[in-house]
Structures are given as C-alpha cells and as structure tokens.
Image (cartoon, rainbow, N blue to C red; front, side, top):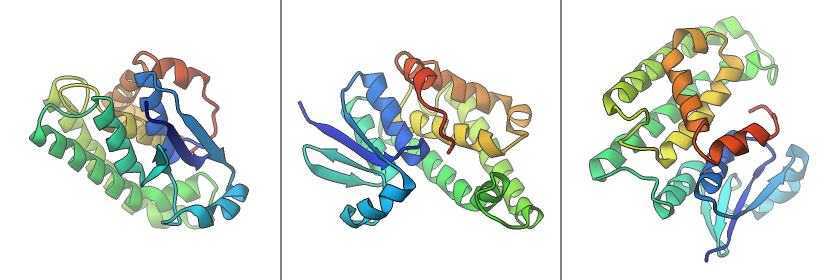
Amino acid sequence: MPQYKLNYFNARGYGEAARLIFHYAGQEFEDSRWTNEQWLEIKPSSETGKAPWLEVDGVRIYGSVPLTRYLGTIFGLIGKDAMENAQIDSIIDTYKDCIEDIWPYALIKSGRKEGDIEEVKPAFEEARKRFLTYLTKKLENSGSGFLGSKFTWADAFLAEGITTMLLFDDHLKADYPKIVEYKERVHSLPKIKEYVEKRPNNGF
C-alpha cells in the first residue's frame, strides 16, 4: 500500500480537495501543515518554490490540479471516458482563470490587501458572471448533479473553490443558488460530510 503525504499550509486553499478525496476514499495519509511563518523555512525544500505537493512513497507531485487529478485516477474518481475527462479538465481550467481575475477583489474585500475595491470590482463582476453562468449550464447538462456522470476529483476541487468564493462574494448564494446547492451536495457525500463538519474554520 502506497504511503501518502500531503504538504500544504494550515488552510483549505489548494490542498483541501486532496483531503476531501482521501477522506472519501477512506485512505490514511499524512497531512503535513504549516503556518505562513514556517513556510519561509520550508519553501527552499520545494523544488518549484510552491505548494501544495503530494508525496507518494517519497515521489513528489507538484501542483494542486495534477495531484488532485492523480488521486482521482487512483481512487476511481474520474470521468467515464476521454471526452468526459476533457470536459472536466476544461471546467477546472476555466475556474482557475476566473480565480486569477477575481483574486484582486477577494484580497481587498477580505482585508488581506489594501486597495480601491471599486477599481477592481468591474473585473470581478465580469469574471464571476462569466464563470458561474458557464458552470450552471454545465451542471444542468450533466444531469447527475456533478460535473460529469458521477462524483469526480474535479467536484471536490470545485466545491472548495465555491466555499472560498462564498467568503468574499456576498451575493453568490442569492444570485446562483444552484451553485451553492452543488457545493453542499459534494460536502454531503459520505465521509466528506463527517470531515467537513469537524475541520477548523481557517478561512481561505
């Protein structure tokens, strides 16, 4: 049996989807977490200078999407065929593009950065509308309640992304209730629900 070690900050962020998958699969793993202050000492040990990374019997996989997709493959949480997997990948790439566009607003709104929120608000609203409208249609078309024909690694990844968006988007729940229902559907899955209810509330 492989030995798994997830390395990331003591936060949800881009490491949380992997944690959801481990719990969903009932797979033991080492959850190595650190503070922002500790990261300054740990960073030189990262070959890319970034986190998260997953170690599988000592072999490292860097990047939130590659490591989460890897776990999805290992535990059977992938699409039914090549086309469905390509569609799932496309949705996640589109989400990450959205996050890049809305992050300046998120940082100012959450008090993590100083700036003129009105200046970045138009870009936030445009990217938000574009992605959430796109995601709503994808969920409607799937007919399963998930991104593909069943629950996959990408649903774990996106559910955490939506959780983060809810922290700084005051109108997401009212404007896109189906998106919030989707997030709650993922978090209601066996073992994931148990973990989510017990995890610390540590922001992003």
